[in-house]
Length: 153
Image (cartoon, rainbow, N blue to C red; front, side):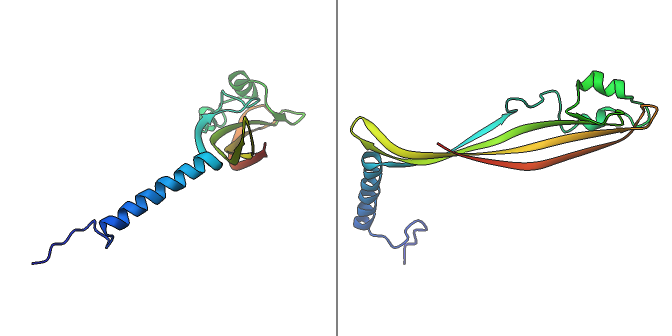
């Protein structure tokens, strides 16, 4: 009768020991001779200068034909863009979703030499309100787009 072990991939005990030793040696070399780092940092915040009083549901807060220019401005504040006759108001905001840091470093005595990069993944949103000449809301258009920024340090 044969004994089947689903975890055994044909490696001998001696081979597994050598593999474990090799893994530890590579880790030790990485710690002593230099490091490569990759750090994903999940976030959920508005960057400086972005509005905080808007969400993706903002467009649904105002009824078409019932809301006026004054209702929108009182609820949301001064728009980021407006045409001269106030027939269209646009509000913009951004939300950061992830920072990714990566780089390398080699210790040299009490100092280190290296390079790091940072990539920020975010979404930019905009809500545009269109009004008729009487100032009543006629339509709302919401958009969002992906944004990526890479910085080298």
